[in-house]
Image 1 (cartoon, one colour):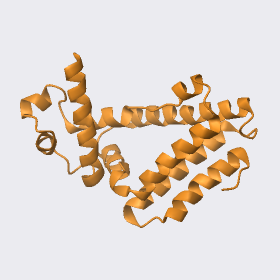
Image 2 (tube, rainbow, N blue to C red):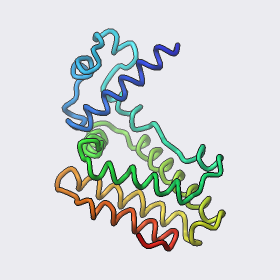
Image 3 (cartoon, rainbow, N blue to C red):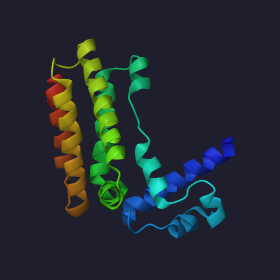
Image 4 (spheres, helix red, strand yellow):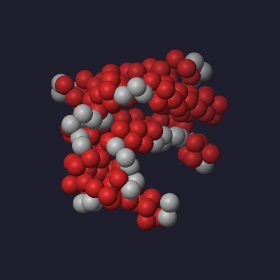
Length: 187
């Protein structure tokens, strides 16, 4: 697809992400996305056939740490910036896709998609933890166990942030605990 088409696709996904964050998955229609993007129905359908297709692409976009690791960036720096992003999402539940993800998982038969997403996310964190151990920045921990702790603790607190107020202290405690487990640093 030409550059303009790719830019339009990205704009659609970014705009839809805001809608899914605010309304969940079930309550977003292709018409809502057309209205929010100022695209005609034909313009939208040229790129995507359904909200399911848009959402699947949105959640499948994996952000790995590979580039930063290859650039020999400090593992601690990568960890802290990633945790800061997670904290922001916890404290701004309107940015969270948690509800939409749970709705999407319950509506469509997407077990393979979610299994693949979980596998990629686990690998991303395991790679960072292994890198930190190799550079001597992190304690010699089990990367699998810590990756699972990071992923599932985060998913739980992120979901809770949609239904109750999570304090800044609670979000910071999440990050501090992970940093302490990996580096021994108390924050």
